[in-house]
Length: 316
Image (cartoon, rainbow, N blue to C red; front, side):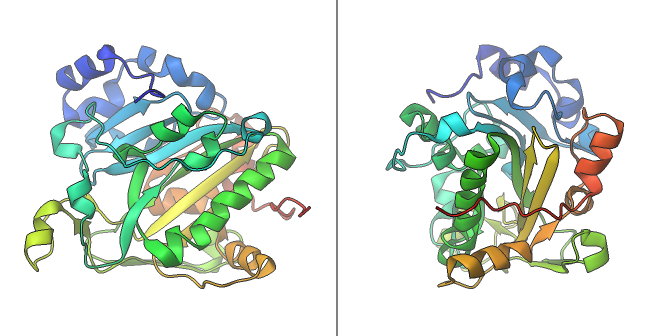
């Protein structure tokens, strides 16, 4: 893991801190090595953090908090600048690897993704193409702590990939942004969750409905039964972009389901615009609190305002 800044200190902390209090008691010094990725806007925190089994991990180009119950990240944060996208490097041919700084109970592995009932793939939260200024950094993103099970060809490889491309295009115009990406998991036993147009804050009604499988796991491959536990399959995925210079926030929330394919560039943007929400709506859906170090009016704007200005960069 050449791009990772985690050290033996992290491993020792994993062994010495009880899982139920990990999020609350992780020493502040553990955050310093990647503070430039989050310090201005703050680390997202779950409203019930003290009772959750999570692990914080710091990589060179992104940081995350990993949920050891769902075996997926709660959130992944990155800071992306225009200068980091100047090199047009192709996505490497690289397999995902297990992160051994995660306790064994919380690790996802390749076997979990083998032949699930739904068309599920390993979906990057911080995409490797964001790090194309360095091949090592691109490869470092291929880690299970940075992935969730996503519907493949008609979501991860289509609409979601388009959003990732459009974010990079926007960064080339805007210059310097923070990006936070993560899953929305099921509430109880339900596989669907709706957000009204009013609650979404941008006039869009969002219907989240995930695959039938709540979990995927290696043991599921050998039997037709569903996993009693394993890697949690989210019902949705969110992406938040904060423009530092303009103090503007753009947030997207999409169902982990099949989306239209074969769209023109304008149609694809229109489809993505239908999934814009406020950050407050994502907080409600996830239990996370964002932008915790932004002050007063700036924080309120980041959480509750739906920008009327277009997010999309002008096309060449």
